Length: 130
Ligand code: SF4
Image 1 (cartoon, helix red, strand yellow):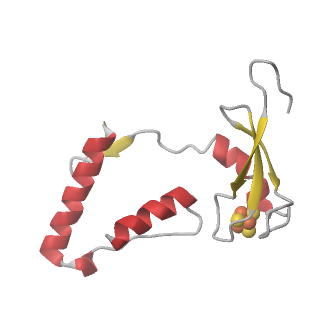
Image 2 (cartoon, helix red, strand yellow; image 1 turned 90 degrees about the vertical axis):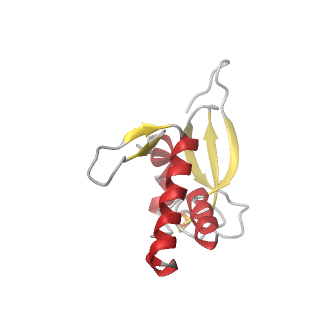
Image 3 (cartoon, helix red, strand yellow; image 1 turned 180 degrees about the vertical axis):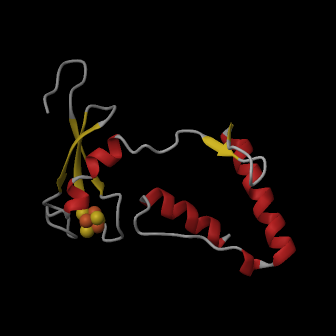
């Protein structure tokens, strides 16, 4: 990818967002989006190699299609409604606490996958341990 004076590219060392192997990668970015991903030859996990998922992760990182705001359903059958993040977190905590109080800890479970981003795995593990 080319760069220009307004959006010079820079390379940032990071870790693949997919599985738990933790391959090192270099992200070429213009400061707004990731332009290119390549394996980090100096990373001790993969020495520059990336599997197909890692090699194609730039598209997922750029156009993830993920929601960019919180949504809450007033009840199970209702349409989800965009909600300020703080309110969504409070509502979620209140609902989880109600389930815990009424049915005990075995009523709660989380689906956690190595396919989640590292940040998502960190957050769900913090929540589950709490
Ligand atoms: S490049 Fe492949 S093996 Fe390495 S962390 Fe990413 S998904 Fe896992």
